[in-house]
Image: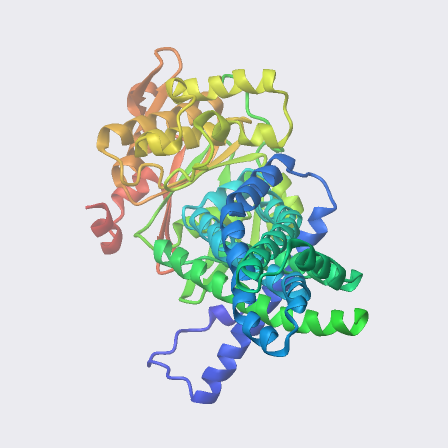
Amino acid sequence: MATLTSKTPEPYTPSPAAAVSESLKRKLFSLQSYSQLVGDAVAKIFTAPHYPEDVLEQMDAIGVGSLPIILLTGFFIGGVMVLNTAAQFQRFGETALTGDTVAIALVRELGPTIAGLLVTGRNGSGIASELGSMVVTEQVDAMRALGTDPVRKLVVPRLIATILVLPLLTAVADLVGLIGGYIVAHFTLGLSAVEFWNRAVHALAFGDLFMGLAKPFVFAIIIATVACYYGLRTRGGTQGVGRATTTAVVVASVAILVSDFFLGKLLLYWFV
Amino acid sequence: MSTQPTGHIVPGEPLIRFEDVSIAFDEGDVLRGVSFEVVAGETKVILGESGSGKTVLLKLAAGLLRPETGRVVVMGHDLTEMNEVELLDFRRRIGFVFQEGALFDSLNVAENVSFRLDEESVPAEETEPRVREALRFVEMEDSYDKFPDELSGGMRRRVSIARALIDQPPIVYYDSPTGGLDPITSQTIITLILRLRDLNGVTSLLATHRLQDAFGLANFLFDSKSSHVVPVWEERNGRHSSPTNFLVLRDAKVYFQGETQELLKSSDPYLREFLS
């Protein structure tokens, strides 16, 4: 009934404490709505109706569309790692360890993180702006008015597609990163293919591979749900779409890096 | 679109009922204590300045928004008591024409119109003739394969009407259906709304701030024999009536509610100014 009270006649300036409390309340409310969306979307993965065509379309947009940048950046990340570590290994006469280092760093850490951040920049922004545009042009309301659940039709296919595709993109990034690392190791340290690949493959244990695939699984949930959340709560016309897109990319990127630390800690505790 | 509309209609009962409905957003009250009824076959024109809450009222009537207080009862369903799944099911039985058409821009005209049928997994051989029939009704059959960005504002609005009508709903809500359109295109849209009201018996809420549209609905009827729009007084042998009445919103409240003549004869300064 608060809405029925009369308006305050004089302009109201909140005290700093009230402003902080209001801001905290809004943040908590956002967190609550985000959690509700994630719970709702995850629950709807397992119940009909499903939209397999939309999932395939999104997998094409996210997976095939992101492949060129994943190939390019993965290759150079692997190469630059060897460039930076080669001098140190040479000082200690342990150049053979290059394969181990590149493999572990790429599979455990760099592959998932780089793939996650690239997909956030490329597809997270795309999802947030697409859904945001649909909200401001009332297409989402039109969908609801036609009896279709926007979470099922828009969020779930993007979530499933990102979950399926990001681990694959990460595996590709790991592979081309190792190829990049090998090429640089060959030309700067004179390592042979046998020396590099033998060490690289043997350095990896089950825990490393598990970590390398568990992380993109979590990152995929973060990217898809954060982008959909900010897209669907867009307000304020085209300016609002821009704001939603920026916020989605920033929040998802930060969330990926923060969760990467805690996931790393947890998985290292389990497996190493 | 000749078949009779379907739905849960109790003769004599109002099809749409608002009981003391209030809603507020961050900016303040949008609607306060709004009550009205719409009986079957009637068109209620919601008049008001921009930002007076017309769109919000329509969205409440479709269950797209929930009121903070009060009840919204449509076709015997209390929308305020229903969960989102029940509301999705309910909305499949009403039509909603949005302000700018709100067509899905990634789908072509036919896919937009067949959206509801596709969602219900209606077989393609049944869908196509129904989509063509709906597009023929709004005289847009030639645009079957076009995408929304290839259409003018008026054409988008017509496709939006076809999409809302595909399942022949007994109730259609129109949100500023002629906003931003030229007078000739506006007249085409109004004629479509008249045909739906007078031939199919569709009950509707129509939000607008354009008086010429409002009085176009109040003063004209669609004559099924001649397939033309005729003035009310000609059709009804001098009796000045049509199944259209008015509701004027001002400062989040219902300012006026009544028949065309009551509105025209009102001496209230605000209404006089609004109508001038």
